[in-house]
Image 1 (cartoon, helix red, strand yellow):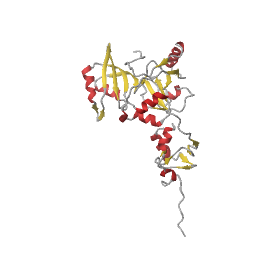
Image 2 (cartoon, rainbow, N blue to C red):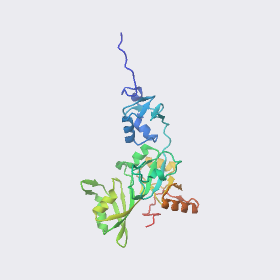
Image 3 (spheres, rainbow, N blue to C red):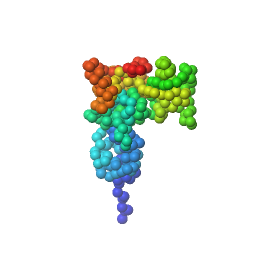
Length: 308
């Protein structure tokens, strides 16, 4: 009598799906479908929230050819649609998080309710304003965020104090602050206004509070920080609280060569529905000029569309 064969299940590493050479890891597929980031999906799998044909899986390494039969929290997951990317002009005083236990406003309180599920690309601090990218695609988010991709982020900072261009140029070699190494930063002194200076900074790492910490290291106190560009995508004249969608061919061009700065065609913007007075004023302005468009092009000028 031959030995009884063990039952196969999604928890079993020998599950037929895991042996399909043409498949992909379930964490990657779910991220592409916009469920969450890969790291978040791994946590969801560990919590038993992801299942195949009704049976929970316990490893993000499970290989699948499609998301057929896959559920998250009991809800079927649809196949990944083409990646969508949005540009949002984040106001100061708004958190980049889904919810805040202290009841502070978040970007999701201000975004239009008819948008697809969006995840932020990186973060902006509570008091940092400017360009925030939002996407439906976890893989695109990862490509935009990884330091190895070399995607530039540009900021304008208003700071109190004195600094020389020579000091700023030294940052091109990077700097170590309290044991943390920050990579090359291209920094330029734009102008002085009384006791304040305006500085443009271009970097590729985007570590937590990097711009503020580096300028504090130089003896400056930052009073305003605006992100004006992320890769080829620029803030331009997108009003505070406004949001615009990047065209598909610009997304495709970026994914083929993330460091290339191709000219991009206009994308229409609309105001976000929120309680922020500045956003409301900006939205009213956009209506008064007949639903203007903003450009995502590569002809970048520091502070374009930002009032000082």
